[in-house]
Image (cartoon, rainbow, N blue to C red; front, side):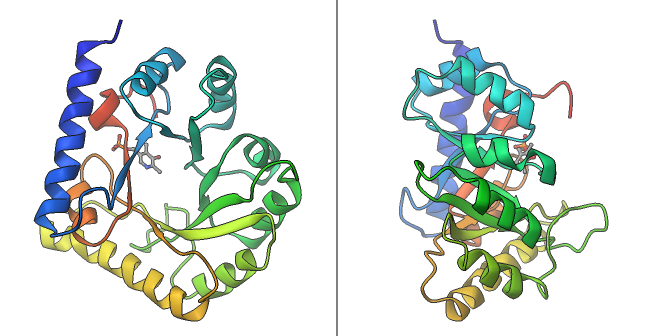
Amino acid sequence: MTDPALSESLDAARARLAAALQAARRPEGEARLLAVSKTKPAAMIREAWGLGLREFGESYVQEALDKQAELDDLSDIVWHFIGPLQTNKSRSVAEHFSWVHSIDRERLARRLDAQRPATLPPLNVCLQVNISNEASKSGVTLDELPALAACVQSLPNLQLRGLMAIPAQYDDPDAQRRPFRQLREALDALREHLPEAPLDTLSMGMSNDMEAAVMEGATLVRLGTAIFGTRHYS
Ligand SMILES: *Cc1c(COP(=O)(O)O)cnc(C)c1O
């Protein structure tokens, strides 16, 4: 039995994404939903899968591994690691995820590359940029980005796909678009710098700011609350 509330909120999230793409005059399907399921139980992920979602984002390694074990029968599920990643937990992520959005240092990239099992395709990665330059947020600065991107591009078991950011929140919609625009421009610059990298991903926009992100070219919108409801911790 599917929870009617989940099905309704997912319909609403899909409608919001479609409306945002239309407002931005972008083709339908050019941005997709990443369902951020951190703190939510495996049973809820299974329901969301039943409603057609395939890509799920998790932020805590052990919690994610436990849920992945419970959902082992859903063979087409795609797991994204989106939280801060401690170097000593990199192996589990290299072995159990398809994507990592939070690469912010060379040492982490080199470890993930070394630990990615040869039996799996390369790990898709986005580099996290601290676009609002907030001291409390992780991510590289725009100045540091080219060097980190070149390092990742040189690692055979990582596939550099794009950039991720969690900008500061603004009340004014135009102000909210600015950091997303900067991230898009940074991706455009990287494409020139590394023409051989498959840079097709702008991971930006969350429940509160997805419209601004889609307006500026988001291709992967990370929605937690809007799909699964309020989180009771973290
Ligand atoms: C929790 C989280 C989200 C989802 O946030 P909501 O506001 O619930 O949509 C997106 N991205 C990252 C990196 C997160 O940690």
